[in-house]
Image (cartoon, rainbow, N blue to C red):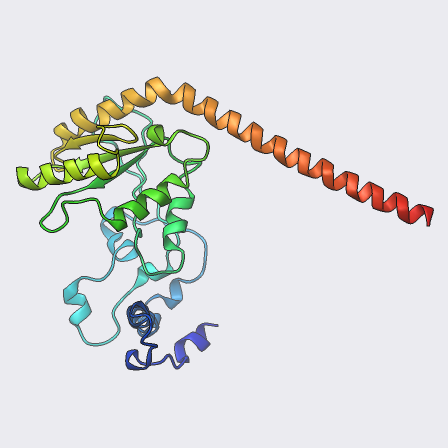
Length: 267
């Protein structure tokens, strides 16, 4: 209950088991949630709320470092939020009926946060853009990237993964050497040395709307226009196959029940 959570004696980080260092991080996060409970307790009422865009930040983002350093309970209203939908006009008049879903939380410590964010993808989006920016010390395809790709891949259902996921390299404000290193690493680690073999890779300056439109949005929309009939056909065929398997399972169970009832009636 709220009152139990407010007064629950969680152990101090020094008392956390030392066989899993991540427990200390999770315990510190949990204690911070408890200390900030008065700042979001009154929001735990269910339902929906509509806010102007300028008031959105505390509902979707962690406190700033300056806010974290202030004395007293730090406001954490985002802890009362399950999902957020942001509606705004798309800046390019050439494109209509286009929605973008941003996925926060990949790599979060919150229980099953990854699955929660990815779970809605299967029936909500047609294509996923996985954006990677080459910065110093991170210009390579690492374990976190591979795990993120696995999570996204789990949402594609029966659609070919090459149709569902596009890798985007954010080439803005970075050195050519870092971009080349990341490009080569993705070609070797993700596409087995063959460009675009398993996943199409696009590049743009994400801070430049015109460049992003020309080098990412336009080819992605062209790809969808060409491949959407095949993607729909894959989804329908896979669903029908799954339904046939379920129907066969039900028929087998029904036969078993019928035989048992018949043997009982005869005894």
